[in-house]
Length: 193
Image (tube, rainbow, N blue to C red; front, side, top):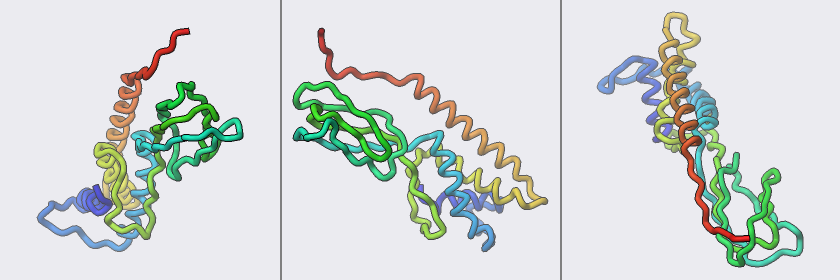
């Protein structure tokens, strides 16, 4: 979904209007939306992480003990590094800051699955900003925004939106935990010693 779509959902929650009516134009609320969506995005992305893949290959040995490979700019955390050896060597590597260090004996193709830091939503972002989160995680964001906007309005009951957001976050946490508990390990080669 796009930022515009989630802003519309948030405004429907805030204004309690139907799709056939137009939302109230409130400049103060409009100016807060990007910042609130950014806060919610980074909070939810810690729970329902954004999975990406980075492919690279190493074809020649290097003179140093480890070859240094730059990690993607949005790298947050490693999920798995798959190695397709061209010389039957055993994968040896480590991550140091923004670099992946692969032992010089490891030649072949690599597939790094990693969790990414989301792209920041700033005041300059247009409504065509596309969220990288899964749909279930995206749908929690408007409830956070609605709750935050209405929190300062003494006549509004923001707690219903806060409760809905918290319930959605809890469901995301359960889902992430179940996925982690049910993950499988794939063995690509067996060696007899």
